[in-house]
Image (cartoon, rainbow, N blue to C red; front, side):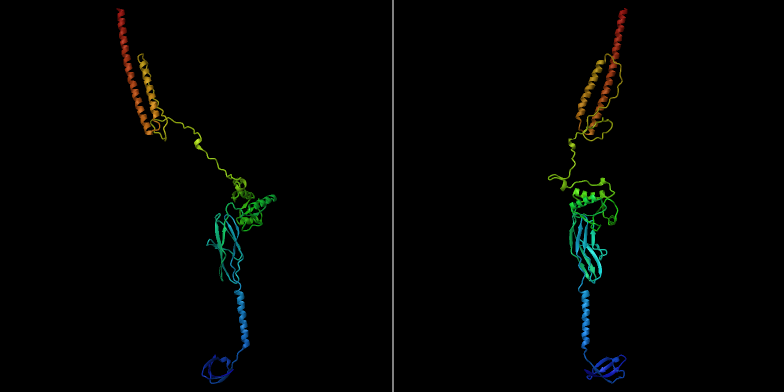
Length: 410
C-alpha cells in the first residue's frame, strides 16, 4: 500500500505530514530523506509483517510458561504435626521438612491450647521439639503456623494427653557402660514394663542408664540435662508399678535415699490391700500413771485446774510442855480427846469439799485456822485455870498440915 503525504513542517525530531483529506500525522524526521523541506511530497509504502508477528507471539508464550512453571506449580507445603513420645510431664512433637517452593520463610511458630508457645529456632533444620513441665494425665492441643512470603499455612491440630504415674510406656532408655549380664537384665526389665531403648541419645531419651560416668553418650546426656541413673531405677519402677524419683539412683547417690515399695499388681493377692497401715494406738485402754498430789500451802494460791484432792492440814506450832500436876492429868486427857474428836470431825468436812472451786478451799482453810486459834486460846485459859486451882489446893494442904503439926505439938 502506497500513501502520498505532504510535508508541512520539519523539526529536529518530528515532521508534520498532511494527508489528502487534510489530516495531520507526526512522523519521525529521522526516517525521512534529509533533503525534504516544507511542501515536499513523500511516498510511504505500508505492509504487514506476518513472520515477525509469529515470532513475537511465540516468545510471549514461552515467557508465560516459564512463569507458570516457576511460581504457579509449586507452593509451600502445609506442615504435618505428629507425636513422637509422651511421658508424665513432657511431650516430643515432630514434623516433616518445611517445603517453601519459591517463597521466602518468615517464621515457624508452635501453638499450645490456642496460645502461642514460641517460635521454632532454625525451622529449616529443626524437625522436632520437646515440651516439658506439663501436668500429669492432662490433655493438650498443638498446631504449627508457617508464615512465608507467599502466605500463611496452618498445620493440623494434634490432641495428646500426658501419661499417668502408673503408665511406664513413655520411658525411653539409652544404655551406657554396663556389664553384659546387667545389660541383659536391663533389657528384660524394659521389655516387661513396656518401655523402649534407644541406641544413642536423642531428643526423646528420658533416662541414660549406666554404671560408669564416661563415654560420648554420657557427655551428651549431661549436655541435654537427661537424668543419668543406675539400672536399679528401672527395677524400682517395675517393683512399684509406677515411675519413681531418680534422686536416690544417681551414680553418686546414697542407696538409703531410694524408695522401697511393691507393685500392687504383682505382689498383692486378690482381695487384699497392697499397702499396710500402722496400727492406731488406743490411749483409752492404756492405764495411766497416777499423778502425785503435793500438799497445798495455806498462804499460796494454787494454779492447778480440775478437781482438788484431799487437803493436808497445816502443822500446828509446838506447845510448851508444863510440869504435870496430879489434879490436871484427867483434864489434859479430856482436852486431848476433845482435840482429836474435832480433828476427826474436820477431816470428813474437808473430804466433802472435793470438786468445789479454789476460793471455797481457801475459805475453809481460813475457818480452820480461826478454829485452831480459838482452841489454842481455850487451852491456854484452861491451863492457867488449872495452875491457879493447883496453887490453892497446895495452899489448903499446907494449911491443913500446919494445923495437924500444931495439934501434935500440943
